[in-house]
Image (cartoon, rainbow, N blue to C red; front, side):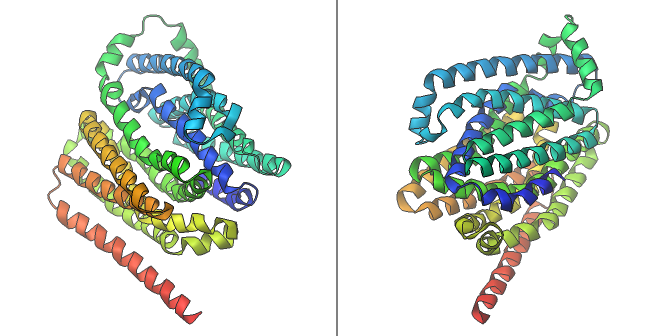
Length: 430
């Protein structure tokens, strides 16, 4: 529901804010999200695993301490080096807003911590309610502020602040508040033992997830540095809209699948292979049509619903469509690495794929225009997720991997081919 509310506000907000404002906001978010991942040490992903509450409470307490320390360090970094960082990325227009990045990091991290706690106690309804309520308030604020300030970037930043703050407040149920008070009063929690037991998360899962996230944010840094904030704005706007079905279907599915996969691996490990392949196949059909339509008709859809000014963002969405299709299918089953405690394996893969991506994008900057840069990113990212799916299936000893992947590729390619033929037919008639 929350993502649908955000989508409903999109045409209105797009007519208030310019692409350059979206580009600077995307850079702000990229800085904040990278630091947020580090702040939690990825321990929130381990919250679901402890069988006794004492270990979970110890993980929670240590995570909050880590978030606080990271927030203080990042504030000092932006206080003394903020201007230099902004100049390096040609983003001096952000100005004093850079000092808000550490505050945003703190709120985002707390939101992740509380969401992980709600997942542990299976309070999925509260998680869904928090997203819907916070997004509605945030988008309303963004829209109103934009109208009053003629599209000043501050509206986008303030709106996102309200989003994470409201989300945290809704997730902070009375039950969790009472437990938190008791946790911080307790001095005998087995913190050292808990961190030792789940050390794979800060040692391997943290850098792996950080590298995976960086791979998605590299285009934002590259576009801002080489092509300017306006190109970044078109890219980030297209990316955010394509991300809506991914979050709507993929993230909610991933949350439930992680819980089910962890329970299945402990109780009936032989069935884990079957439920993973079943989910993979199911997601293909859920996500194929919306991403294929956006991938083929993105420029028309964006120009009609968002205005001619955003046609370029629609073109970028067409380039990104295949990548998001494969990301939707693979993203939920990536939690298998966590369930199987193979974080170190994922770290090696994430590091290798990021290095290849950096090389690909560096070469594309030398050879292509901004369009070629984004096509290169999308092509590599799509292939990267296909390889990732194959590796996950091999980990689970799936026997018919080749058949599954050929089927997926053929379905995706044939769907895109039919829609491109339909588009060509319509243009020919017109």
